[in-house]
Length: 305
View 1 (cartoon, rainbow, N blue to C red):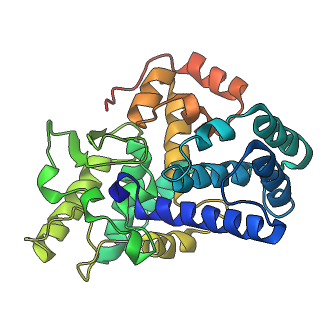
View 2: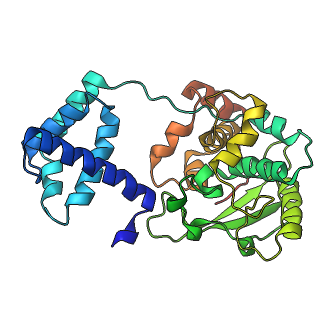
View 3: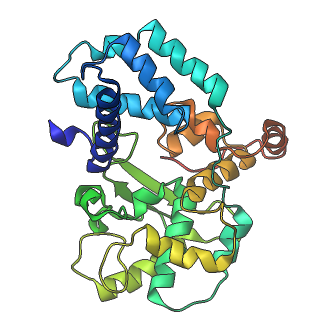
């Protein structure tokens, strides 16, 4: 039962449960939630954190307490709880600050930087592949907290294929929007002039196989470890793209660049493995700008999930 969620998710849910336990202890409420106490909890927590975060906390509380109080989902969806949350969002919500997308120009700056070090070649490959494949940083790197590392989520060297001379693919074992762990095949091909992602990947693969011929993970640093977020940021910072450009910027940048090429919304959603229209928040340009590019570039790129 405990394996149905990632350890990182359980960690967040445990934090939410601890906040609920502290709340009921302070106010001498029963541990079992009811519509009134859950409504009071929302108002209490909104004094300290964003209402959007309180929504996540409620999910954690429901998940942790449902085995003991089976009707908790009914309590969570009650009108008073729903209306309290809406009211707090209206009263206290602040604009969402998202990371800026990487642009094609930024990717070219990384590509045109000459650095023979193996670890830089790895970084260069990660950022270009992530941009083309609309990948999360977590799809390419291990999480920073060791206890949250799941080797089953790592792409494997044996999954790499070259269907044609100008494309390659690898299997993504699991990702955030894959509740059944079916995995996906990520197919990458050249899309933007001046960025030869296939050649970049081949160069990395040759160096990787020379150093680590028997290792399973596809992405490996010079010392044989799987890269993590700190590895990625260490090589990203010298480019001075600004504090708002980080790992999430690959996915946002790739989606935005595809929209500018005129890719259909269905294609972008499929390429990014989004389970809903939530992908649209990643398009960080005004709709009129995207529409302008769609008129200039009416053809959908030849890029398939």
